[in-house]
Length: 476
Ligand code: NAD
Image (cartoon, rainbow, N blue to C red; front, side, top):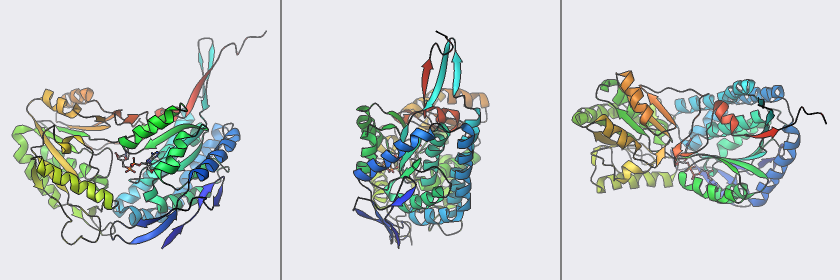
């Protein structure tokens, strides 16, 4: 049993004022594996005060100093790579291989930001003016449970690069992972008060960060529902907001695509991170006259996908993170059937022999129409909806018929057609013919998928404020 009863404030591990204790559960077995004492509003205020004090000197550090710190943050994560992975498997339930890849990605974020920092211009001339990009101040970082280390490093790295100090409130469902990464960062020799961690609930610690006048910006990743609450609460103190929210990403397969490649890839991406990922292509949009072929390819692909314990070799889909997430997925599978979609594979309940954890059956629906809940709402589990089109125009219309606009996918053997469709999809990212990544290019959403961007120079820009100085060269 892991006991977490400390917060990290001003470079020290301290006992929280908060007294609420929360169980931490292994989703593969439903066993209680830990207990965390949650921080309260006073703890949050203490952390903000430490960050505010540290900002006075940290904001004056040089690019070289901060560059070295980013390198050290990367290095400590790599030094504790195995420890980070093991607790992510136990507490979150992600299959081991996928966890390792994500931890590596999280560590690399520090190096990518180091590269962005080296090319970032903190001072520019614009006509007669000198424009200085100053670090914003104390930043509240609020993150979800579905890739704990990645979300923390995606926000922390640009904050450090810019010269900002932070208070991190990670998901209360990831307290063990957060504790391990905090212990790593403690070893990186970052000045006291620059990085602070407060374990706690969203409506307590997250809300205090959002309301507090000494916090200049909230960088949040999570649901659109909570993003809207944060937007409303932050308005009183005019905070800058970066909101990375939900998605219901379209995956358009044009008629001339290689279906033998595109369909298996579509199923695998839709179910990556056990379907608990914001960017997955959960709406598969295919030509109407190819539907039977698509269904056949989907079934064959799913036959080859292993659901099970994240420690078992070859497992691709682990459990849902908790009982609530399990029930949400079950609710949508039932709703899909009730609303008249055709169940191609999967369905309600646990896969056979996996009743001991929050495992669900990978599920695919066909004959999904745009008015159905399973076509509109984010499920955040391995549930894929297939919609059909007759013309390219209709495919684009279906793709854009969503309150979200985070990611999109297009497959075609005609690059010109693929690029034409990509240019008309309203989405922060479009991937053509495969799963590509570019960690220096911006990531974020159109519409209700969010505000602002992460990664690279665009991500770093969110953490600075331009100050215009006129007459800087005028002698009286
Ligand atoms: P969530 O919105 O429930 O919680 C996210 C974080 O917000 C948690 O730390 C939570 O404690 C905190 N929070 C809750 N209420 C709050 C409040 N009133 N004030 C301040 N903070 C509060 O999301 P989740 O269930 O942890 O994660 C799943 C969601 O995250 C999905 O909707 C998914 O699409 C989204 N997500 C988006 C991205 C992206 O990059 N766009 C990436 C991953 C996940």
